[in-house]
Length: 111
Length: 111
Image (cartoon, rainbow over all chains, first blue to last red; front, side, top):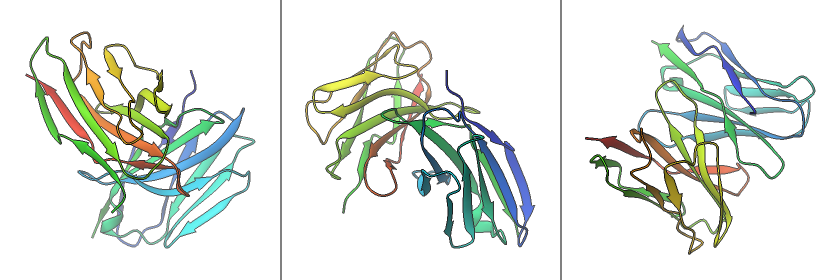
């Protein structure tokens, strides 16, 4: 059974701190790596889809990197704000398969 | 506007009842998915459909059934054979630049 691991499980930071999360996935038959942001009572919101080894994506203060050879991705948030508080989901798939999700990292940012 | 509609938002089921969760999309995408979330767990795949009149079991299909008679609709039935149906259910559609788009979910509770 393919497994996606995310760490840490939860994180509490102060406003202005920068933080990062890790996603580990099987490196064989890699197709794509997805990051989602999920706020309570809302739909998961797509942040990034990455397909190439060495990919780096950026969206405002949030960025992500991808290493398909060793099977990991990092999500970075620079200068965290209270509105960044959410659960960040990582998901991976092989060609022709459905997404397999990690358990998520729950971020709480205090002002 | 384009999107995915899940209904109802909250659903209560008595022991031994079958209930059906609705998922409708107007994004004109072929592939649709049902995921389940339990506390402390990641999203787990129940069923998916790549095209009308075709669907495949995911990792936890036991006790569930689906149909895909129309491109726009992918209803999920939780049968009495599902021993622990209390969970949060998310429907998703695959397509577009960000991969997957999610509905807002249905929270099912057994009473």
